[in-house]
Length: 438
Image 1 (tube, one colour):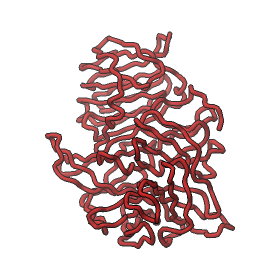
Image 2 (cartoon, rainbow, N blue to C red):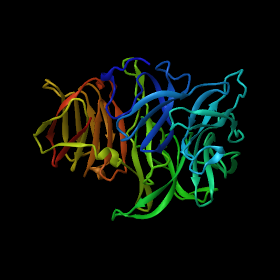
Image 3 (tube, rainbow, N blue to C red):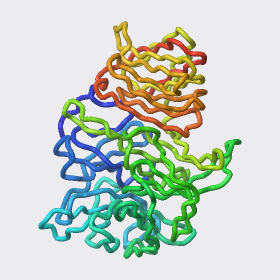
Image 4 (tube, one colour):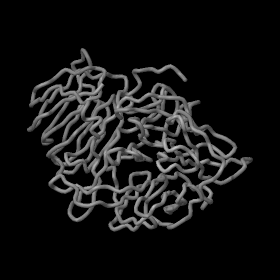
């Protein structure tokens, strides 16, 4: 691997030491560890030679990059898949083994199979290395079918595999022993495309308690469908929704299996640009998903998991005209309790002019993010002016409204090497809480 150039890397958003990164894969929690595999080109900063890269974390902030685990073979490049624990001791493997359904992308001429095939790898050393099995998990449905996501459905006593087939079509497959999955439903979801996920979420009421649970069918660009699932068929019960508001940065998000608290924690690929010819793309900040019912419709909430929030170090609470110094080697958390009229400036060490200005427009309901030359806008809507959390991480900005129902992201990659050491609350009617993680 190439040597790491620290000044081109964010603090909280994982990126490999060198190379290309895209879809998160094989997300599984075990023994206090969040495993993160991902689509990788370890040989260059552009898409090619798809391999499964590997990193892991105990706190969802600090990631240890390890050696790649799946390389292209006679069946094709290693495309996306998932991970789960072998809690039921399938396939003659120990219960502490990890299972990894994946896509072998056999589209190149001369390969043994010109179709994309769904196969299985496993690990008996805690995810450090993966061993490929020779068999396929299911019969191909279309030339490019891909991206299996598998989980155990307790109510119907079977493993469920969801798969993108083609166009807006997805398949739901079942197996009682992690072999020979059979189709139970082919479903067309308008606007949905590749990288499916299917999970059950609690609905959080106004009192903060769980009022019910609903199933969510997720597609790559953040399109999601809320409905019912009986282990065999998914039935949408409301119109499609979009998780990300006016942004194309996040894509192909996947959820971790095996969380001991039963949470649904998700991480997306962020399509950030190549920096210093060193690395292309990062992962987003993991989010804990729940649902909220607003005006009769279910909406996803994107909360920061406690592993992260518990490590945010409070720095200061500012009112209009006040400023505060922070550590240069940190990601910045900004909590505004009233957006109206708010302007926040970020300064580098020794500089009198801000390198980033965040300014809320009361008329449009948008936050403008300006570096003095270019301005990006995050549109929240005027109804969400009461509260917001902004995370600034060396040019990558993630923003959520106070109720966590709107999540927006943007990237200013030319700011990656600039280290902020002072925050100024230039104007605003409320208070600004400043925190940091490093």
